[in-house]
Length: 415
Image (cartoon, rainbow, N blue to C red):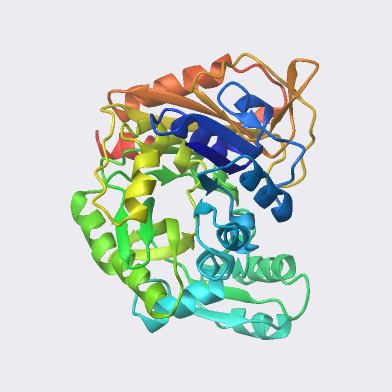
């Protein structure tokens, strides 16, 4: 069958790389894709990710069997709806169901209604109301801008002055909604869950992301500076509780409220003293979690999508190897950064997934904030980390920075 992947980042690079391995797939296209995907797919950089009409037209003309939507923006803008209206099958929720990511208010209200464990919260759409609230709230407090923010719309304020700064940052216009959440103590993890209506099948391998820009979880939140899987120190009991108390109830809640979710639901969870709680939902694969999970996945992703469609049992198979991925980002990210820095030394052999590079005169230069994820595989997390940083060292560039402690929590917890 012919498959079309939507997106241009490392997640989409990994999706195309995994899907092309399926015996069910004989042709892969990516819109718009990036230059690093040329060896595994036909890329169409002349079509914009936001040009829904051209995407539908392309899918019809090329007799695409399935469209796999990678990023959140096309989902929340209704690309799945337009493709489905044209009788094209889509892996990715429609616009209404994608609100689970697109609106933090929607997600919090749904969790409150159905008693799904999460942080207590308040919401404000007036800056002055928010200022009055932080003068008496408990600290730390978490501020989240309602809507999409590419992983950078969350600020943890440790005191009143930091809260004032966060309010100034997030309230760009009066009338916007900002969520103020109780700060949860604990360890975070990422659980991908295949969902088709009330049918929910969580992955039986989880990943752990590293959101902060610098070592030891310092610096601002980013879209993700690295990830690894499996997470050996988080036990099966926690995954079973997360499935029972979060994954199954949220699928049922969406269905009861009239939202038909078909795709992968990302559950960003934290282990608290009371058990696992939701930090956030995403309506698509995490990035860079997708890169490490799909690298470790032995079974056929396309077959899983077909089984999900027909609500058949899904049997995951995983390689024995642990996988660690280290993100190299443009210096200055997630704030202002320059583009056009030279990057070389890597091979596109499955050990690197590209987010922000373009080719100029046969040379790669930076074109985004997060640039390239270096992958390491080993018989445990420690050896996979060594391989990942060996892959990092092969990259030649003065334009990039990275964290040195990706996966250390697993290593320290398994000493």
